[in-house]
Length: 195
Image (tube, rainbow, N blue to C red):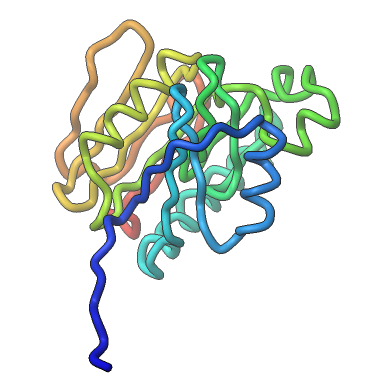
């Protein structure tokens, strides 16, 4: 019997009705995959990131965590963390941060599972297989649901899109660093080994 090659899209989309608890349990039992759920209930199944993207994600999260350890202003989360946004979507940004008073307002049970909160700050790092349009839509969704600052780092086009509430998207071509502005006071992300 001859082998047959099947080409699947980088992200599979399924429509399955699951409660928040069922979705959480599905994610826990299939930890080799990354799941998200749109506001309309569509489940997105994404394979693990490639090694190069994972390496760059660590550099982002490490820089953010070092700043946060010194400022003690919030909590830092990596790409395996799920959040339930106010619109009902369940998303996992590549890196995110929540102000400490907002995080502490959650119950221990809410903190243990997918926290029902939109991070104050989010980063998405575009990998080679990511759709730019889908990432841009996700960034807009974060802002519409309460994020105060978002960075879409597009290595392919060597640019960063900056998202802020009530403002047009700002595009920086080939930047070497990014400022956390008043959302993350004093934080500067060095992009030299990320872009």
